[in-house]
Amino acid sequence: MLFAVIVFAVIPAFLILGLGLAARAVAAQRVTPRVVQYAPERGSTVLRDALLLEADRRAASAALIDLAVKRKVKIVAGSRREPIGVELASNAILTTEEVALLEVLFGPEHIPGRVRRFSSARRALGSRLRTLVFTTEHALARDGLIAERRITWPGVTLTVLAYLGMLVEVLFLVFTIVDGDWTALVMTIVAVAATVATIFVTPAWWRHFLPPSQPKREHLAGLRQYMELAEADRLRVLQSPSGALLRETDAASASTPARSPGGDEPQPDAAAEPLTRFHLHERLLPYAVLFGLEREWIAQLKLDAAVVERTNLDTVGDLLDVTTDLAAVFDAVGSLSELPAAVGDLTDGAGSVITAVSDIFDLFP
Image (cartoon, rainbow, N blue to C red; front, top):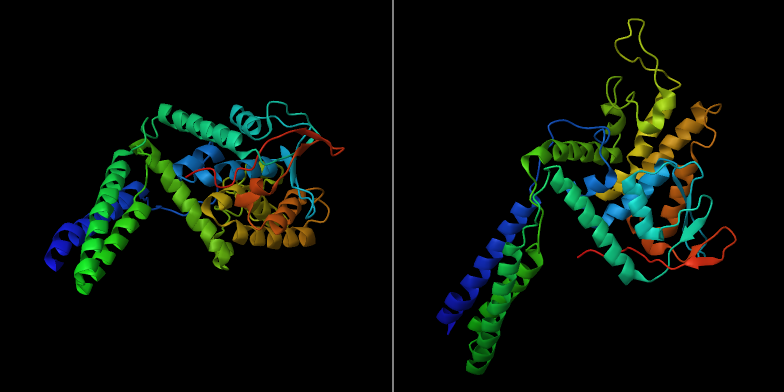
């Protein structure tokens, strides 16, 4: 009995487990950054980068936070009894992708000054969000960055083999119990555990990234490397006049550093440095959500905000409002990646319910 268990249960179980681990390694398609990057690639969008990172679950949350960072929406933290809301800025100019995101989350009517809050009709919204992901995916395919079809056959094949293996293993469990062969029983249980592990480790599908996507994915890997250093004091050590510290961002166009008399390279400005660094780090917050680093990055933004308040009192204005709002939201929700899971009904400024939309937490498999 023991020999039969090893040949027909244990060896096949570990074979398909090995294939499942190999499929997982292939699906990861890992890239190694050549250099540390301090900002997203010019022309990229959070939604497209989310798919290049295969961070589908976090895509909508990160894109919504990106709109807040760009001052196109205002995220309003409610009390414990009042859900979190989103208000469209009166002067917001939205791209086609941003309009599609807001229509998925809130419906087609975007009236400036109206606070919108989610409800719990999650099934319909889940379908719309998947459609948004597929639309973005098709755009990446048209640009030649990913293959048109996802790779599904390894996951399907290994899952079917795993379930067939479990049928065989269940029969061996019965036979070994009847025969009282405890060694064979233990080996059969080991085989069952390996087969169950195969189901969990084997990816159901993955995107096939084409060679033109390699530079973009390397850039994102370099950005992640930089952001992970935010947890240590090395973050400021990495900054330099030609690097992150004085790099102009979309949010920081008003704080361009002074140039040298020759006009070649920007020179550090003691008054502008904290403000420029704050702009940079605030812009990276959506990517912190994609990378799962939002907790550390909110803490970093709070530190930057404190420095800006001390050194730029005359120019701060409402600069810190977004950070303050998102910090309050983070304290209320516990994770910016779970932001839409914490919101309630869509309401106007007077608090009356307008329409029903839903949470987006855990919509993707």
